[in-house]
Image (tube, rainbow, N blue to C red; front, side):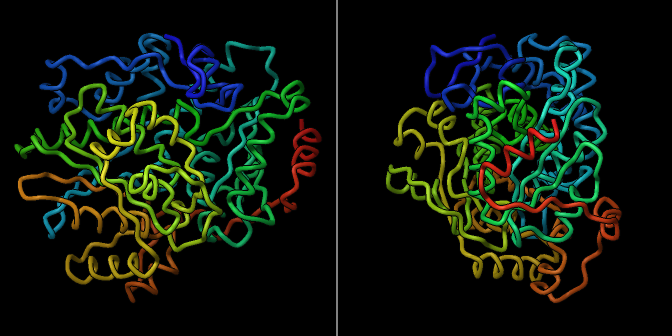
Length: 435
């Protein structure tokens, strides 16, 4: 199957090149020429499948034999080698806990899937001495990508993060690894980190001398495994006898990758009534839904750092999937909350339901309460373990918070950080010197 740029459908390539390059030459994002629709019999029998069986079957449908079946099987079974529980809280809401992977964030699945797929492609091209993975991060992406690629021969990871905007635990998860992972502290914002990476992809000298790719959600390999979240929720609800005739998902949003995956699942046949997109004060997509105008803005820092994005990368994919602003509004209800509202939601949920949610999950949890109608079944995507922001969370709920081993093992390790300005010349020199 061919993959085209969202900016020019005549600009096409293979899945291999889409994954390796990440971004199209015209700066568009790659999308498949079509998304195959799952057979009705498959949909009816999903409840009998394990998570890994379901993930493999849907990935095989979506990628249409572009990856050998034995290779894809191993990639999927490794990427989904942990639980994704669907929890019904005392408040009557369903929460899909996506944070039980190695770095305790929903991005673990997508980055592990991409890492192993990229490593397979590298093994087919001995002329590629090194692949350089560039990833700007406000916390969770950097740790998930770094741990997914850590120790892989022939692949280097450069995680760029804004000074003072990443929690100590999040930073430790990628800055203590060493080896093929380089942590770069940029004297600037998350937007500056993204800009450095985008400039690198457009620099002729870098691309002539280095093999560059991105592990952000601009890379199509990140989106395919994230579709499984939505199918898995549906399958568990059906298995438990829950009414899924009016199914609603609430999704915390920044770069819109997870929401895009949900829309792709819907186009493949998942019966979703609507999605709820939820942002913090960086509410670029919210403003688009309300006004029909997409206007990126400088990032504002918040207590939900993974949502701090002033220019959502996957907006073009959503427009390609849904077409018009009117159709976007039919499929998506948009909400936005500030820090005070996020704190109120965390405190109320902890007080009333004895359930601890992190700031990113809190925006979606609150929107679900406000948006869900009688007769509808709602699933909130919980995207990170609250202990990833341990100090903040303990102040908010006024109670100690246990730290799981996946996080505690990094706390006392030595960090190795390369500090630099937000100038592209310094970043380019760093990449060339380490090539």
